[in-house]
Amino acid sequence: MAKTSTILAIDQGTTSTRAIVFDRDGRARATAQRELPQVYPAPGWVEHDPEAIWDATVETARGALAEAGLGPSDLAGIGITNQRETTVVWERATGRPVHNAIVWQDRRTAEACERLRRAGAGPAVQAKTGLLLDPYFSATKLAWLLDNVAGARARAERGELAFGTIDSFLVWRLTGAARHVTDATNASRTMLFDVRRQDWDDELLRLFRVPRAILPEVLDSAAEFGTTSARVLDGSVPILGVLGDQQAALVGQACLAPGMVKSTYGTGCFALINTGDRLPASRHRLLGTVAYRLAGRPTYALEGSIFVAGAAVQWLRDGLRVIAAAGETESLAERGRDGVVLVPAFVGLGAPYWDAAARGALFGLTRDTGPAELARAALEAVCFQTRDLVEAMAADYGQALTTLRVDGGMTANHWFLQALADLVGVRVERPAVPETTAWGAASIAGLAAGLYDSLDHVGRSWRAELVREPRLPEPEREARYARWQDAVARTLSREVPL
Image: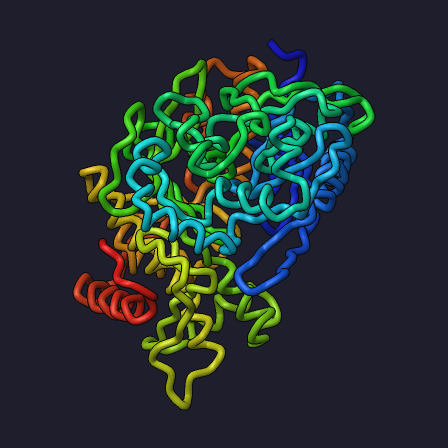
């Protein structure tokens, strides 16, 4: 049993890095946050500077501890949650990245995925990994780096380079290069990991031309990932939990029983349904993934990924400049008239369409369309995309879904939450602990630290802070959804089987 019950959670996301100090019951004692600059080298390309991620991680971790008045010796451990699929390659000798990180949103390898799809590789990839051939995942990003950074492929084959998702890069740096590891949830997002055998797969490594020597060791989600170098936090702290961000939110939302669903609304939107110890083969283009792995036993989930959720609001603010702050969309949407439909395929469409070449479009514009209509359309687009996912999940899982536990920045918008309940037709629950992703990582670390006997502790402490029930009559809900489906059909670059 740990001497203390305090956990530091590091939440490294797409647009910011946060560190939060939690007590054992999920109360946040201190928080520090720093925004992460985005890099757009070409249309459809998205990168991050790994050094900026590292600097922000150290700064926020130190800042949260200072605000809480704690030192390293006051911590039972550290839990890490991270943006998934984002790909980093670094030198083992120096820890220096050989290139910017290629972010999960990046579409530069769409043609490579299409070639593999035409060659018939899709079914084998899905059978082993639960994933669809798409540039979203790490494998083709890693292959691109090995092919396009001078000397990288030869150096990787000699064992001079290391690959990882962001969690792996942070653990390497935090431990002073002592550990090159990841957890099963992040490994399951690389398209190189057999989720049933729970190991890197040689056939997939050959398909994507990835040398095994570059890969990290895969551990349980609650495990001993190493100990921080004393230089980082002025003391040594065990790193005891790692989860990809959406899996961490699933845990933080206490969706621990099969059939429970959570949906997180950040830059993108990610909905997961816990499927227990079995991974159904999706017939509706959802992703199979590891929800968490404890004591060597994986719990699985089906996931629907939407690439643009809060990013649509960011587009209104930074691209069109029709709003000055994201919070303005709530009052604008209340005034906006119905009829404008936004399909926010700025970087293609994710589940259940998986059309990397689709591009965004606005439908229903008239002379009096203004900021209020655009704000409403942006928020409703997230609701309609969520319904796409919920419909697919119900069909694959074989059970109608009645409740959606939600989290993420967009859930501060009360108009959005009611629209979500109305347009999807489910009960929407927002938790009392808003930092569900970080709390999920802290919970997993707390489990490894001996603070809890099981994750049931999270389930017992979870409660809803706000609930919205559907109020929209079903005929109107169906008519609006049909209008959305028609707009999407006009946007797709190719026929997509649904």
